[in-house]
Amino acid sequence: MFKGVIPALITPFKEDLSVDYEGLAKDLDYMEKHVDAFVPCGTTGEASTLGYEEHVEVIRFVAETSKLPVIGGSGSNSTKEAIWLTKEVEKVGAEAAMLVTPYYNKPNDAGLLEHYKAVAKEVSIPLIVYNIPGRTGINVSPQLMAKLAEIDNIVGVKEASGNLKQVSDIIRLVKKKDFVVLSGDDFLTLPILAIGGKGVVSVAANVAPHLMKELCNAFESGNIAKAIEVHHKLSPLFDALFIDTNPIPVKKAMELIGLPAGKPRLPLVELSAEKTEKLKKVLKDLGLLKQ
Image (cartoon, rainbow, N blue to C red; front, side, top):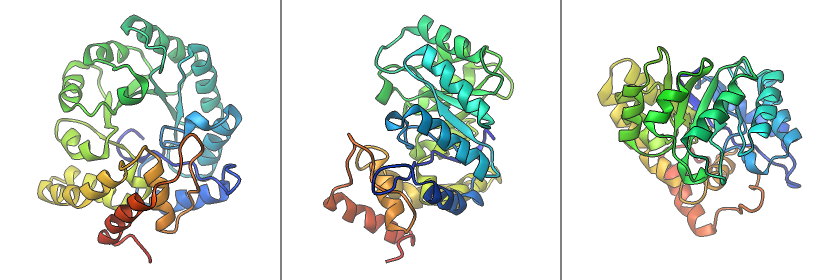
């Protein structure tokens, strides 16, 4: 569950911007044979604009539809809400939960530690800390991560700081056996695997799950030259999927290759025509574009 390629799923929407569950099933089917688990309702899944009922129902649907383990996105800048949401994620069948650090209110390290302790004691499923300082305004330092790892059911971290030294320090400092570090940045997947990471929570896997799996499999089998080759093959896609705010580009990419996606919800808007042309070229070069 906590290794390999784990897509950070988009949430496809219909024209009226309601959740497209039929489309979500098609997306899961496209990815399932290539990946190791799923993360619904994270940043890429537009969790910030899903209502609580929608959020829980999307996780329920993925858990009931997919045969793979589900790591449900949860967390909030309110500890009370984070506890409620994580308990709901557990109830609807997720095997684990991934909790984003509290955003906007910028707790200090003592507050972060107490926040995760409070959530962890209310659920029995494993928890993964989601560190993405570019969105939350705070960073979980390696020293704090070592303390969080001492909490029994905190089993790993999705590291999206973009700081390879920080990732290295976490792997070095955390003493818990089987604690996993997952890349939160597609571009850093290979470097993080090389220093002891176990996989990636991936945006690109929504579009090219087979190539992301090829990269990870090559590394795991010791074929480092092949892993490097696939990394460089995918690098233009990694760049293109962040040509605008995630998940704007990945939803457009999925639409272009014939997968259900729909528009993002406001305040996000569709990818511009100019950026769409750049994205099309990358998809075409990878052999993903059908038109």
